[in-house]
Image (cartoon, rainbow, N blue to C red; front, top):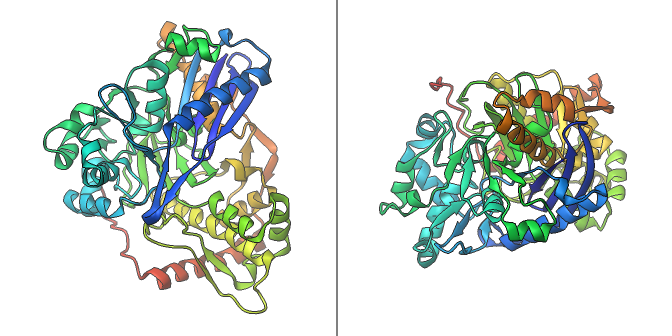
Length: 507
């Protein structure tokens, strides 16, 4: 048995997998709270992650009805881009700044200028650094909390921190490291000069964790923690990875041809490639995968958080919200919501705010507001899918994961808006499942260096064909009109954006 952990923005989920039968035996979860502040501040106390880890693990073991000493390995998935800083004694210096934090947008812009703009960032790192990436958080911390900055001894990502808490070892894995902004995705190496630009004294360079491959173990559980968790002290902890990388493994997206869409707090789209095919589109991040390849990816900053904001405003539960969505027609009778509550990454508008357009006395209804927010967040993903397609990514079917994938109405909207068939995986918690599968792969590699991740995914990942939907031709045509309206509003509200540089970037 293998334990998969997914530490996300809203909570931690645990999943217990029998890697021989491919069956999920038990699941558990525990919630987190968000620290929100002015200028886009989004932070969390890391103690919430460790407490939620313990609670979710206990719940998964209880749900499975099996003793923890049978668990052979743990794989941790974590929200990408976050910054956790420790002092020389391993103490956390301040709350972790998260992926959705845009407080360091100005610092990001200055770093981007130093790199030579989007083109220079692509040439140097293989990605265009964006607000939310880890690197600008470091510069922000240096300028806003200089005394704490001087005490930094370790720089970790959220999943790195959990691995450190489990084992006492500071490591990072290529996939999650790809989203730091100080990592070259082609060579899979830290960009030390980038960190020296922020701190010429070498403090940040010395604080970097050791890089390990996706099939390598970080170590075994600390004995006192194994006792507290009720787990075997010989349990190995795999390298783990970012939530998108683990979600790719958990949907079997480890070979070319598949595309995964996650409907969570953020919206993501990604596909596997065997080579670092760097896209000239700045919004497409060609991260490393946690399966040995690369994972071209786009990420929107607003998805279920925007839906929840409208539900809270109208005092609706989830079922009432869904009922209203059905009552409104495609296009919400002309109501369009640009749902940029956290700013936005795709399109690149970090300082944007949400706005409603097209309201009249006739169309201002609860049903149209509910439909408009659901369509608004999905339109951002359509924009991202177009960017991936322009970059050469092809797929005949989209695999949906995340909490939003459970909504049949939303699945149909996705299929119609993307003009592509949609299906869900059997296990919706793909990131936690991916962590468990990766742990099983890491464990198998210790005795068999040729152990296959593909075979594990074939055994443990399946599609739920009962959720499959096909795009409806008339709806596809209607959504093309809605999409053009969305694009025109983005341009009218935020100005004509510079067209992407179509110059070929050297792989």
